[in-house]
Length: 309
Length: 271
Image (cartoon, rainbow over all chains, first blue to last red; front, side):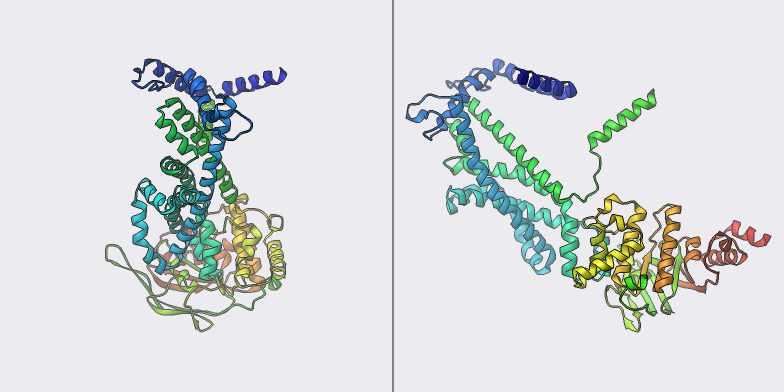
């Protein structure tokens, strides 16, 4: 009881400290519920255009347990078992894990090969000349249009989906790395050269670390992109994963399920973003820390307040 | 003690032999950054290069550093032509060039690592150098944790540890406050008096040039318009800098650079 009280108190305190955030969420959730009641009735049974929260939690969520196929922990609806919330959460976790594995392998491969390609292109003029035209062509290529090609070449397997994710991330990181390297201030390079460093040492010890901070944008963009690519490739050709159950939800026209899966994908993508961001922050811990814009505005506000008094 | 730190050899003679540096502006106009500049500086001299901004002081230093090839003519160190950057001619830049991703000690050891020196040997040199510039307690700090003056000390320590024979200093203390600058002047003079490296110090601050140098080169519109000795006694404290000789020198510099200075003229007349 005490524990529950503590949780309620903590939520209340958070809400009191961030009233604007609370109001925003109330507007979004309340607005959705109102839209659910105002939306015209769908011609397809069991498929409201805008599902109400009650429909999402009492109908769509337990129905997701249909995706749980292992004969332990929760009943398996496909073999006559009942639909349960536990089964739904287990099914969601199972499919999320499948997508995360594909994403992690593809993202890691794409980031490492992308950064290395970008560094090689920047270092060797002949590689730059060779790669310039194909790279510019690839960065303009619509990635989703390449899904069928990858499915055809490598199948809807782990290999096919990770290769596709890796390819998309690779293109982004190559371009991002080339830009970061070209923006390294000359003064660091000149200082290293006058201290006797060779061209290779200057590149390895000066250009690469100096380019890192600017690589942040490309890396964080790749986190979001990799989720789109993972879900996109699973949507079309995989037999499991969040993209696959999204395709099933669309097939059964269950908008509530689509919504739940979309929320799970958003949370997972946000988590990827935060993990990459904190790993990157550690890597560039030497960069002078600027106060965040929010804090700056707050400081300016408090200064204004003091002056007015 | 400093001699122990800067283990590689002595200072070096520096010669500029008819150096021209001509750049083409985007408009197609030719800009003469240096015109027929010639001089010889014997080893161990402290030279200040003084002039207005954009008149070729930094280009002179960049040619010496090997960062800017001359259009015609040559820069020579001990009669060997400068063909590119090398650790024998290290530079302290106007901007902050301390590598922010390396700890202070790694910055100081950078040139030694580039030379392939063993870790134990590097440690001995960096310890002594850091002690000399007063940064022993900050060896493991990030540059972002230091003040501007301390970062300039790191830059000085890097050049010291590199064992360069010629030190090229391009308005290194220009961005610092008066008191920090004075402290760094003292430190630099202390190092120079012990090592007698050849130092080229670019500045547009005449007082700074008079405190530090024993020879002044005045640069105007890319030409070396005057090359004069500074025979003021050392240390050059406020009394020395206020002496009639120093005032007369200041006035001569201002005249050469085409700048009227009424205060210097007034003091001179009053004397």
